[in-house]
Length: 124
Length: 124
DNA sequence: CTGAATCCCTGCCGATACTG
DNA sequence: CAGTATCGGCAGGGATTCAG
Image (cartoon, rainbow over all chains, first blue to last red; front, side, top):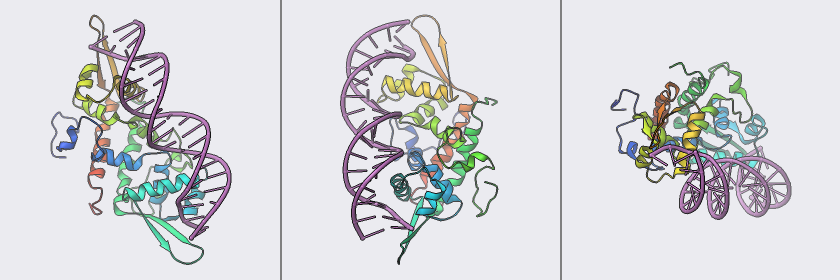
């Protein structure tokens, strides 16, 4: 951040802070798009704990269907959060690992957690 | 989670960090619910700059329809982010102001911005 | 001026079934 | 083991209309 116009934390001094309609190239939109959708943060949480295979993720999140898990993994790979590593052979073995960029979601989720944990307590 | 096995920031040592399915009471879900939906962050951004009336918000975000603006304001009031202040008389005048809790979204949005701004570049 | 009610359309999510 | 294909239900979002 390069300024503090009004005294609140403010947003970066970047033209994208001035958009008047939702803009996919806005960094906030990019971040929220990466986190969007049911189950997404739980998948990330599992992978923050270490790399996991497809079945391991299913075991950790039993209510999550194959299709949605597959969707989420693709979404997160697309967002640069995860990498897929295939091991050839039989049975096929794949594992998913956070990229460095994905690991940097840790503090972001922490910020969301901290804010959400104080909801209702208006303190100030 | 009760540890920091891998050296990443980790999540709080709270039972809600162990849920195996989406849980509305999870702080992360609470925060994401507050930010959910198209236009939401732009409305917040406007109000981070100062209190605004309904029409002022419409002017700042011309593509945003009345209905969705109304929906968003209700959502954010419900989330404890905003307060509505009515002034009696004619014409009716209302303004919206961030609560202290809402103002604390500043750093959260900043964290999202920072992450989103580095997407693609794999080493911050 | 400040909204709420309605309608429709689209996209997400879940269940099931099928493939390499 | 690791997914993809397909379908149906439901909620989100936009335009329009109406009301306090």
